[in-house]
Length: 427
Image (cartoon, rainbow, N blue to C red):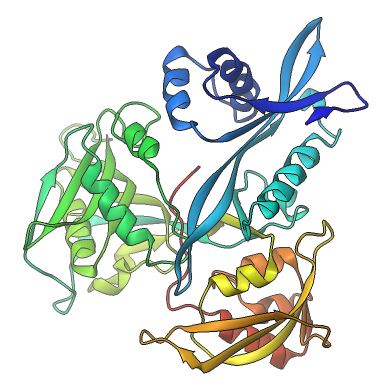
């Protein structure tokens, strides 16, 4: 990418170059308050980052060249409403050392990557924002949200009409992840916001220990249906806070995934009936979690704060709107404002019942137009609306969406989804 007027050099790092990867990893781990990279860490990261795009900014410090800012991107998939997975430019490891802030380094790296992604045909970029105010400036908007659960095991009793089926549960040994990956891949394709996990992700998940997917005292349990096919799993750790002989264990759910409600119920039933455990906690769960609806006493499940999780950035407005499907029908002209440029457009979104599929989802016809807009919105707000997790009515009430209240309601109706979008996968 060349050298700037300040003498800072921006270029690519090859993950296969171990020492270059070590130098790149030092500032990125320091920025996220982590320890310096070990040889074991580098071994694993070389496998995990194969094929990823690593950007580094170098500066000469105390007579030697050092990496002072980093960015990592890779091709991934995110599930769109009614349409399944589509390609996305996944953005991660965006760091600038405190000694080099306010020099435009993040802007330089990120805008160059977004331009590349648009040229290569991506309609979206995605990231998980460490600090929310930063990425709105680049056109990203929060597209999924997550919450935490605290379950009082002693109060858990399933309703007699809760889905149940014959099946079996088994503990999964460390290193065996193929069936877990199969379950996750089926599940993530059916809910907006689902992100793929590649072979390197599952390879790392198979190793247990401090700071990993499952800790040294953790377990993974697989559920099979009555035919023996895997249809759910849960990964969890246990903390024993017992005093004397009074049991007071806590289960911390790291990941729970199921392809149908019966397997989901069986996994929660297993967790909440473990001996010596009083409380089950889970993070990064969907905001419309099914569990309370299955219980005689829904207050046995307390939900925590709701936080943003996956952020999207539309790069191509017609492509983004056409990538998903819709449950309503109607026609709106949308003007999208993008200060950075790539997604500035005025489009006609036409959703007609004649294009409705057997599943009830409708394909849209999206065309550019010179017509006066019904709705004016920023690219970040369009990105937030796209998966169905944000209300256009709320954005209109907040003064962020231009147009009439009726137009905002129509847009909110078009964008709505039966389930809230959810992404449980960190990257």
